[in-house]
Image (cartoon, rainbow, N blue to C red; front, side):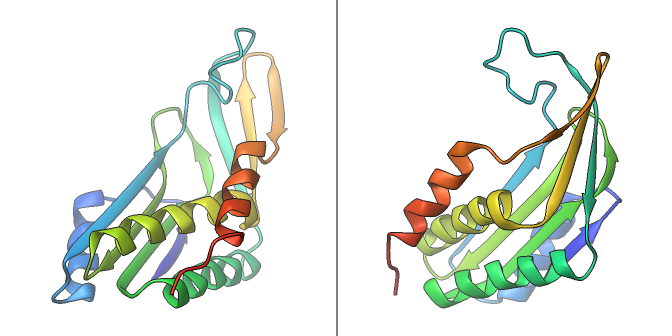
Length: 158
C-alpha cells in the first residue's frame, strides 16, 4: 500500500498493519527517513535548514511509486509492502518517508526495502525546497542516489 500525505505517521501503527497484511512472514524491515538539519552535512558552509517544503504531482507520483513497488515485488518474494511519503511543510527532525517490506526471509526484506528507497530517492517525482535563514533553494538529486539505482539495474534477482 502506498500513501502520499501531509500528516505525520505512527511507525508502530504502520508496522502492525504491515505485519497483519503479511500474515505468516519471517521478516519485516522498515526504514524511516527524517528531515535533516543540514542538507549537505559534510559542507562546512552549509546553513541550517529551517524548513523543507515537498511538492508532488498527484496521480503521477502515486503511479511512479506503484511502479517501483511492482518491480520490487517481481524481484523478491514479498508478502507485504508499505510506503508512506509526506508532502507539504516539514521541520528538521520530522519523519518524511517510511518504507516497510515483509518476506519469508530477511535478505529479501532487507534488499527490497533498500531497492524501493533507492529508486524512490532518485526516480519518484517529488520536488524539495529547503529554507534557510539565507533564503530558499530547490534540492537536486544526489549523485549517490543515482549510483545506487545503477547498482540495482546492473544486478539481477530471481
